[in-house]
Image (cartoon, rainbow, N blue to C red; front, side, top):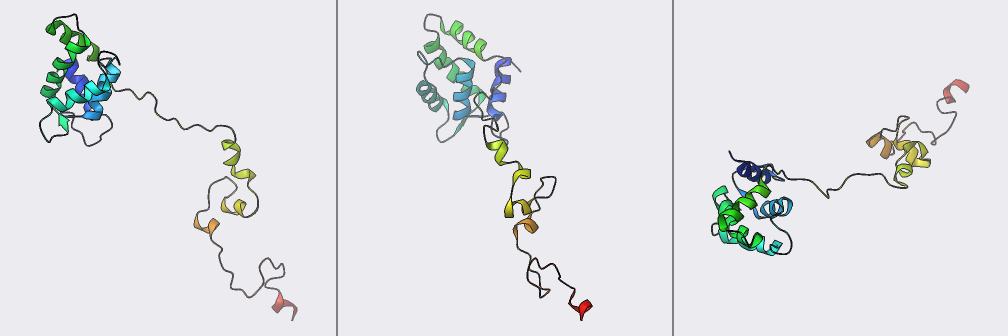
Length: 168
């Protein structure tokens, strides 16, 4: 398997757990062209990428195979490298793609900024909110949220509960 085909398979499965790696969606094709430098924003734009993708895919299909991908690269290489012959331009485009993997640049990272740390510290909770967590800060679940009824006959928080029989 060539380096270009290897890169094709890696981008084809990116973001799709059910993908086999033999067919690539338009979103992943666009991502590949963007990250590998085929799309430069001037000679080749995202619109050009989408037009070429729709031109090479079979009618009614939503994915392209590796053979259709090669056809798409033949169409794009002429636009990307205008001064070169078609063969040289194709090799230059393949040179950009070889060995590349999908990156996750710009993905959201979970960070605690400013007051978030203070707001999520359960040791600082007061009142009824404090009852929802044990000493370690772990939630009590339903027992911490629900008022459990006391059917003893005494008023809530009565200190002498259960002492009536002993005094009379």
